[in-house]
Structure formats: C-alpha cells, structure tokens
Amino acid sequence: MRHVRGEMVLDFGCGAGRSTRFLKQIGFDAIGIDISEDMLKRAHHRDPEGIYLLAEDNGSLEVLAESHFDLIFSAFTFDNIPTAEHKLALFKTLQSHLNPSGRIVNLVSSPDIYTHEWASFTTKDFPENKLAKSGDEVKIVMTDIEDSRPVLDVMWSDEAYRELYQQAGLSVIEKISPLGKPEEPFAWKSETSVAPWTIYVLGI
Image (cartoon, rainbow, N blue to C red; front, side, top):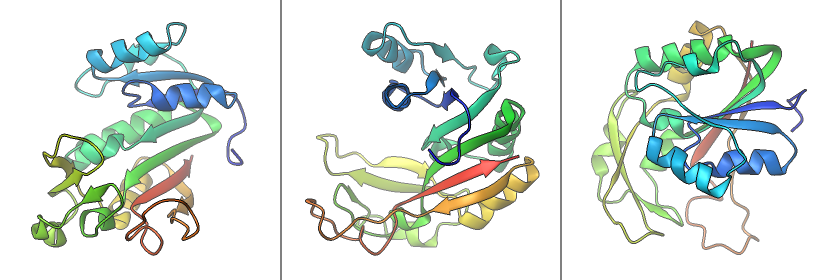
C-alpha cells in the first residue's frame, strides 16, 4: 500500500476477521478489534493464532492501552454509528493511536449507494432514501443472500465526513471512489458510472 510506512495494523470493526486475515496475508502485522463477542469468536475460529480484541459498547478502546499503529483500517464500521458525537469521539481515539506518519483508511458507503441499483444491492423499494440527510437512517437490501430483510445504515455525506475528520485532527490525503470496469465478468448495473463506496486515506 503506497500510503503506509510500517507493518503494525489495527483492523477497527473487524467483525469475523476477514479483512484482518487479508491484511496479514499481504504482509502486515494485523490485529482486530470489535464490539461483538460472537464475531470475535468466529474470527478466532478461522484464525486461532490471531489477536482479536473486544471493545466496549461505548466505543472505548482502553484495551489497546498505549499501542500505536502504522495503519488503522476500518471497513464499513462507520456506516452503523448513528451520531456525529459518537463518530467524532471514535475518530479522535483512533487518531491518538496512530504513529506520527501513520494512516487511517476509512472505507464507507457513498450516499449514492442508497439511491441506485447494483449488482448485489437494491434500494428501489425505499424512495425515501433520496431525501436523507447526514445522520438519517436509510435502507438497502442485499440481493446475493437469502435474507431479504433491509439493512439499516446511517447516511453520511462527504462534506460531513470531512468536517468530522478536521475536528478530530485528521487530514484527507486521498479520496478514492472506485468504479467497476465494463470488461469485468460481473453483471454491473450502476457500478461503472457511480461509485457505491468511498475510501478515505487520512493522516495527522
């Protein structure tokens, strides 16, 4: 990864550890942290030698003590954190655990994901999503699994994220809006012209 200098990585909101294992496979010394004991049990089952830590429900990361990291990776964790106050507190805490040249990679759902159709998501039954403002609850259904119940997320705009980053003492080094390519072997719908996700690379 061109932005990272060092090997120590925290996977914040690691869930069952899929991204933690991937980070380890590409050469990082990665540990995971999550608030769900059940998910951490699954992570330990798949990676018995791995380090997976339980965070408090209030978002406290005291379990990390004085640990600092070259990279803090977070995939979709902030899609489910409802308030600006809670998000900001977490970003400040993550910033305090970064090495001086460290980076945070924050992968989040773009507001566009809740108003378009996708290869593995649908939002057509939720026109109210188009009226959502930052902090509002939105709905989306995953079409590649049997459970058709809507997932509840919290929409957050680019401007709102940038304001939180600034308040937390973080700067945006790069913003990436990945698109699908027409030649790829997938039945893309909106993916080749609209990015469903946003990747922020952040530094101190």
